[in-house]
Image (cartoon, rainbow over all chains, first blue to last red; front, side):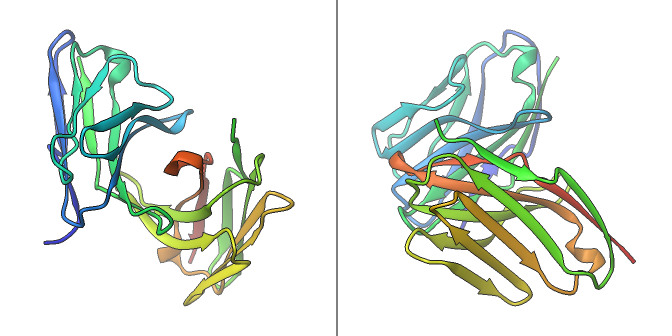
Length: 111
Length: 111
């Protein structure tokens, strides 16, 4: 099906472990984004990408790494997970000027 | 830095009443404004996209207006239904194709 898919939907990991959240879109949108959503902070931009091999930091990038070797994929890696990274993570894609489409989210718990 | 504010934070109305949700932003240099709906534990669903050259957009019972000069947008939902209960998020797109979100308005429509 066409759209934007995130995996996994739910993840529990231990402090200090590396974890990768996956995001795949089928529209070939040039822009892709990662947001985290937390109570009291709303949605905050972690990283974004304007095209394959072009990425840039958002508002809260510390502790995260992204890559974009293919237009359709934009994985987000937590190199050494901390409890403060417990959150709901949303991936989004955009064709400039035509709005954003969001994935269903990944609920990550770091214990 | 762009700041987006949504007032009120929560709203409760009886079924059938019209809903009025407000969004304000500090920097009028935006490309577009997008309204989203979020159900508990779910992702973001796009409702309406208003491009900077437009004054309003309509979809069914939903109507959104945009006044760039005053930094305001209003989402109207006519004849509210219990199924309209959700959190509504306003987001503005500025330079770099990045979205800045408001904190949302949590709506409860009572049968």
